Structure formats: structure tokens, C-alpha cells
Length: 356
Image (cartoon, rainbow, N blue to C red):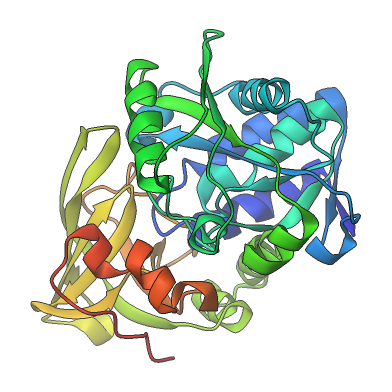
């Protein structure tokens, strides 16, 4: 058990930006929103899954929409309104909240709702990274029902999807509603039990985000290499280092889709990396050869400061290091790969685990 205070938020934002693989919503905006909530309603207690009570009712909350829109149309308390909508529908009150994903601003979305509701947050999430679609959660891969779910916007609208034939259909219906809500909304899913959280969630992810950010900040202050600090905290490797020379980005069907091209420098001299993204980075190629794919993490950070660069802020001229991290074990099973492996995104290639 620990307590998230305002002082923790910059570190969580950096760490969640790294783990977000380019998506999950702008982490700086999320940090500002969480700071506002904590100043108004106080800090938030964080519990490990095993610290939950036997009768716990844990509600997953998160943002849904296009990150390119989210930096202009900033969320307010939609996650709290979605929480209340699902509680009213199922007739149960949450005893704790959990993040849908640890990436970007979604890492702090439950902190915002929890601060206002006076609830703790579980040190875990449903991805261990960020993914663009609702069904791509370890919760649902391993049998937790995806419905009922509530979706809320900033205007006061909320809808409840009572039942769907699959998590994919929950994504389709929630995405359609989100597009009508202006491509930025929040959702909440019916409560999970303690056993379901322990069995299906990626544990210790909020702590990992905080520790990653702290390592980066400490390296900057000491004049050390922030990339080394990142890799010492979360084992992975540098896939490529270079200068961004092209970004093809568009907002379509409620997602930020496109690709970016990086010309190599230093150890990557005379090479070119191409990364495809759908909110998050999906596949990285060097000179046409695939070097990393989902569900492994493909993360771009600035070479000098280790600052994560999200897909909506990627631009020409940035010097970036592209880091690769192995996916959480829950994604490397046949069930996990069927939902979030490269073929799930339409790529005609099998998943090859990243060697570290």
C-alpha cells in the first residue's frame, strides 16, 4: 500500500508515457488533470491486488478516443460520470478502481475518478502497456465479462451497453458512441472480484510507471544517460536511434493512424526505421525487416532527456531512441496473441518475442 500525491504525478507521467508505446492519451495533460483532482479532493491510496478485500468490487475505468483530439479537447470528469453510470445500472458500488491501461494519461484516469469518489486504486491494469481497442485487455482475454459498460462525455451524456456477443462488439459500439461524442470519452466496466483481478490483471504497473519516471528524473539531475536508467528499471533494448524525417498521421474512425520514418544516426547510421501506429506503435521495421511487433512494446523517447514522445506529438526533426520491451506474460499466450498479436491488427506475420 502506498499513496499517490501530487509529487508522484510527474514521475508517473514520464513512466506511463514510456509504457504507453506512443498512445494512451497525452501524459502531461493527464498529469495536470490528476493534480487538479488531488488538490480538490486529496491524495489516492494504492493497493496491490492481494490487498483487496474478499468482497471487493473493482471497476475498470479509462479513456477512449483519438489522442490527436484529446490534446485539444481535454477531458474533465468523464471517468467519474462513467463510474456513477455503471454503478447505478448494476446496483453496486465500487470499492476500488483499476486502470484499463498503464499507458499515457489512461494511467491516471482512475486516480482522477478515485480522488473525487474517495476510493483506492489497484496497482495493476488490463494491458501492461497501451492498446488502441477496448477488447484488448487481459481481463477479457481470460474470461472477465466486458459488459455492462458505460460511456460518458463532457456534456453530460452517458450510455450503457448492456450486453454484446463479444468484446470486439463492445469496442465497435463504444467507438461509434465515442465518435458521436467528439472522439473523446471515458468508460467504466461492471465490477470485478478480487479473484478476477489477481488472475487477469498485469500487476504492479502503476509502481513501475512511477519508478521509471523517477529513474529518468534522477538521471537527468545527475547528468547521466536517461536511456540507461530506463533500461535498468525496465529490461529492454535500444532498437534504433535517429532523426524523425516524416510523419504520416490522420484521425480516422476514432483513431490516430499512420506511420513515421526515422533516419538512423550513431549506431543506426545509414539505416531507416519505419513504424506503423494506430494510436500506439504496432510494428517497427529497419530497412524493410521487422524488428519488433505487438504485443511487445515499441517506445520512442528523446535521446537527450528520455522524454517519451506520443504519436500525436511526433514531428519532423526530433532525435529519438526507439526502445523495445518484452510484453507482459499474459499477452504471450495463444489466447493473448489472438487478441493483440500482429495478426489481430492485420499484419501477415507471426509474433517473434523480442530478445533482450
